[in-house]
Image 1 (cartoon, rainbow, N blue to C red):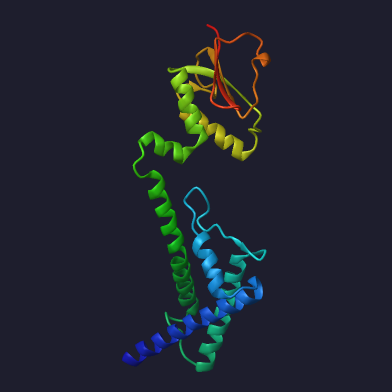
Image 2: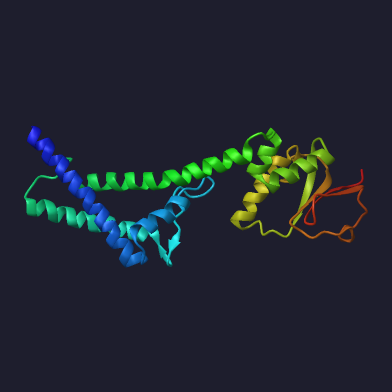
Length: 234
């Protein structure tokens, strides 16, 4: 039993070395860069918060980094099976050395991701420390939150608004912005789901002049050049 454990540890160690060699070969041939420089790039870019992909992979020398990792996994598997065949030994973890290879690459990815996660945490602690809840929300949600808060301050209460914008709401990104703005604007309704009479206009991402209105409004509140709240006459 002890010999089997020692043999399994030796096999796992050899497989780990094979994985590292395969990564080096993959980085040199596909990314034209040594492994330590590739790891340095990934350590700062591999992790982004949940608003983005879990593994937002940067390109290095015009090549997708994941291609080199997939190639390294395939090469590691081939070299591992060759090693076990020449040694005429059973594979660790039953008859499936691919399990060991996947665990090794998972650990490699975890170690690479840790510095980037730590850097992101430090940045958030620096940005959010000592700020009020509203300041934190403004940092988190950006323009939709700030413009909606501006509108609710200028014209509080429940209202139904028409939305004017140059955004193409048929596309995903503008529609996401519209939904976020609608959420933060509540109880001002820009989706037309209430039975209230329309009494204001929300202008966002549009260069607006009062001449575009048929009737003179009661008030115009400008957040910036492209975002306005127009209160219509009663």
